[in-house]
Image (cartoon, rainbow, N blue to C red):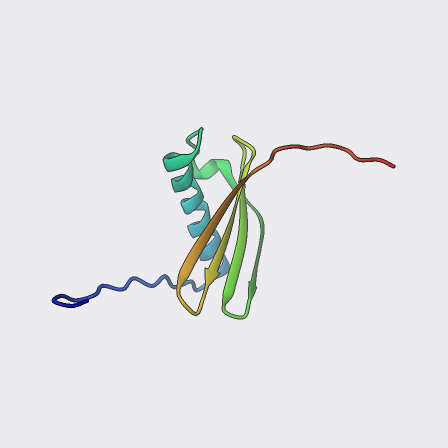
Length: 95
């Protein structure tokens, strides 16, 4: 930045438990900002998570509504990305 100093805040993840907890917290924050229902941390659960090389991925669900959030942590950049999805249908398909 010209005329000032830049402040860089890079997220660091050191364990799967830490990553999952950060994702669950961000999911609660998303719900309070944008969701139809406010949820608590106790309403959330980890559906799936993995780590490949320096990247982490996690899917979080909750007990209150039909939303899921997918979090991807880019270890090279120290950035966490969030995608939130809503289930639109649930049907049985038989042949």
